[in-house]
Image 1 (cartoon, rainbow over the protein chains, first blue to last red):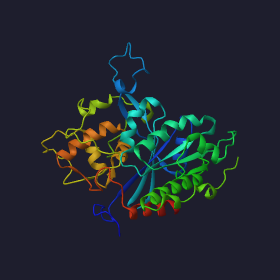
Image 2 (spheres, helix red, strand yellow):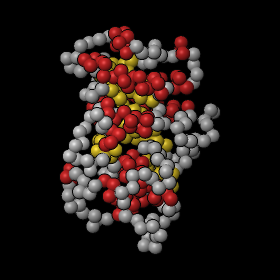
Image 3 (cartoon, chains in turn yellow, red):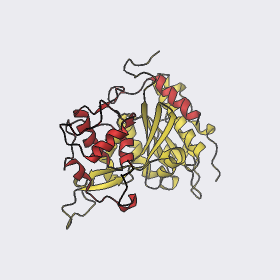
Length: 211
Length: 126
């Protein structure tokens, strides 16, 4: 088969990661909690690089690190295959953490809240620039204005090959479908199919959230 | 490990500044920054009194957690230590031969199509 010779034997533990991005309050924590075993994870970040222009250090000059709690979930696919979900820090000042988080990731989910669509521009830009495959998951909140895919795609100026799906981040099966769509998208890009034959945005496969 | 009773609850927050357990070091001794999903596993016997390096209780806890292969993120979560601290402590253990990195695909390289299909099938079967 086309396995790279470096891939380990089937019996040893293989870990994979998927990034969950999106603006503050877009539902990242909810989605991670809906589909995975959530675990506490924190990181100490150098405040001097994290907070330039944000945090006033006057009077607390000795404090040089700040604690950042991360959304972190684990999905055990089988005994030796574990998928990890990492939520990106919501605040813009933690952009410098993204390279570390996204290193070696399979792909990313950009959660979009149609009330604040602009909040996910930065994530879309980042993944496009770094060539990380991603899907846009439009989280259908109660009371959120109902935009159709075309409007959202146009607003985000999405590449036609990038799937955009509706989801309800609170529901396990909906979160599961988002991740499946991402994996299908990654595989479609991998197997070198003609981009024109990539699966259409899988919206129709996603159970419509009850709004 | 019955004696490992906690004096304070987890919610009390750290009673020791995070990098105190690394002796103030914030960079891994070997300069290698481990990825969050790098798999580490115990190698050789666990720390004993005759170790050339003075292992801290945190080092010992990490070695115990690595009796079965675990990711760096799992170790950080299970020890409730920040990732940066765990990276420093794991580097000590790797340097002393107590823990080794389980060979995976080369850093940054994507998994094979077969492995991706396995992940996809696993997701569908959830």
